Image (cartoon, rainbow, N blue to C red; front, side, top):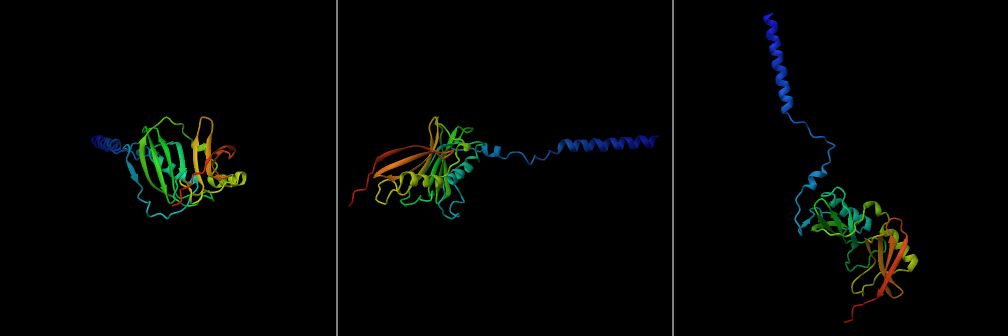
Length: 226
């Protein structure tokens, strides 16, 4: 009888020790947990520019406006689960490019609502060069689902519909074709600018389905010959 009691006590001690160990050892993290939360908690400084380390190691290339949008959006998602675009446009580099719907340089602003900031993304040579954290605003934003048409599609439409030509080397402010995404209260526009009928022209298409929505014109201003 005494032997049985001894073994019962021993078993109780072992089981108790095992239970204590189980309660002390932390449970492993669920591998499916969204790691984005760690990025959202990252501190960002207003008006500070953050350079991208991989910028110089990547080859230069021309990209479409949708490709530029995705580069900026990917970076914005480091800090915000569902960032939205405010605007995006190509940046002039004195090259007569854009006839294929592609350019090397772009810039765009994305919302970071959880931080109450916006992010200005700078793309050069088809690569994300840097981003700057700026103050937020009340401008209307653009959801990812509202952009389906790409710049290589609308350049063909504009050339066919308006005989649109690229801005020439002698133009003061713009060279080649330029593109941008913007919105008003009713539409999200994907626009292309160039020259037609001896005027500067910007033509607006629906960014969702490519429907023509209108255009604006202005006089051509050329650099004075020296």
